[in-house]
Length: 324
Image (cartoon, rainbow, N blue to C red; front, side):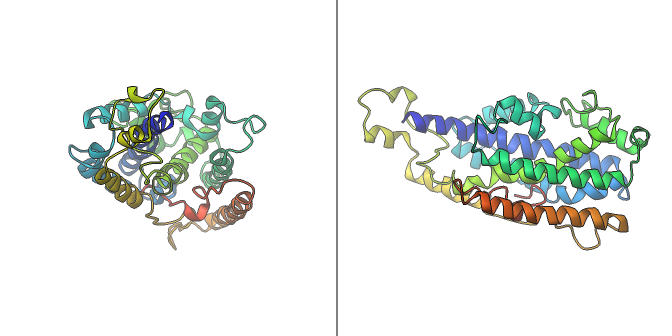
């Protein structure tokens, strides 16, 4: 029963913060600013837009049907819908953009040391994907920004960054070379774009698809408890535990919704539409990126022979964008 209560708390934090706030809501201002501030011919527009496909549509659908009074979230999670919304906003705003990049986040959480934590598939596979995306972004942006001065002098790029941090814009926390919304170096631009693409592809895959395999079975990870936690005490019975679990109709709703959300795969990381990049220079670094993703797929398959299978960050199972 104690473990179940921990799982209930984790499920609520996961859905409101780790999943919806820190992927869906984090990417949304980038979608808006990219379309408002960058011309369609801008190299950064061309790079980012495939990683935004479907994101505004699914976020709006969530607003209408899930994160809404009497919606799916309201019906399943422990909190009221108003408190769930507050948790989402706080969960997004207390984590600064730069600090949330994968290498920094792993270090801050104390899980970056392989000797102290030898088996952590999210870290191990995630860092492979992060590095592959960063190398692709570095090679691509290097075609158009030969120096930091070129970055600082790109008016469209700077307007993009300013909208992201503006009070009447994205209100993004901790973004920019000095965390003020200024992009002064090519190296920072590479990191920031890597973060956007990683969040919209791999990070979302890591938090979305376990909803089916792990979270859809209510006894394993209930989204709410149905008796007070104070019943956990010496002498508690199996009936007490069953009373804590969701009723059958709630368990069925959890199964239906989380299976749906965690089993829809549309697009694949690295597979851009034919002709999307019209600059012939892009072909070579793109091919390198795609080949590396194939290598990572083989590495993960090999790793899964020596650990509990973890498929969520296999490149073939990572969509290009948040589209579910």
